[in-house]
Length: 224
Ligand SMILES: [Zn+2]
Image 1 (cartoon, rainbow, N blue to C red):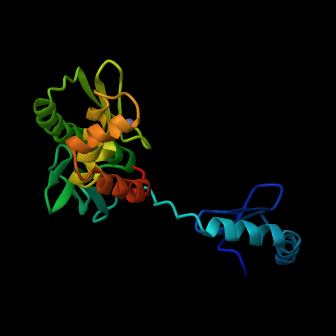
Image 2: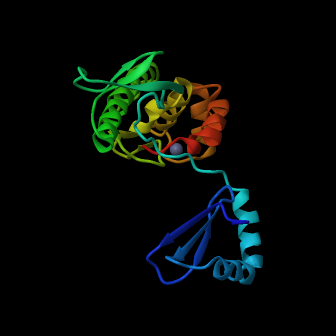
């Protein structure tokens, strides 16, 4: 039907229309609704629909969540590695530059295993960076935790415990390093004052470039 990207009939009472980021129009109608009824609905809502479409077309299309199918590209340190299921694998593993291997299993299991892999990899990589910078700048970190935050890459508590998202393992190493050093700099300056950015600049002179990359790309990673 013209002007509609997807038409869904279901047990419902009324026709509704929704516009997604990117401008995709989805119309939902009760089972058995006639084409004429849909046309007159569209006519009655034409102005609203056109405005909504124009507004939503400007928004970036959010990435689709992983499906956990054989060969699907999964992010690891900024690279896409194909997912490979192996009957003999007992746990998730990365073959760097080659594949991410998971034991055969359903979608939910696979998601949990991938998250576990990202969690371990994030911990390993972040711990290595923390050790280097803490030694170099005489910083003391009381605890390091890896959580499953979707939107926040890292945080630092007043008690000097650092938290990082397991999704860091999806980012290029340069971006991970930015997040880690940013949180470490908070051990000296617990805010985003000028003094904080100066401190961060001493620790990571090209932080602005890395921060820019993260701003531009960090929000468009697929949900797990
Ligand atoms: Zn901060």
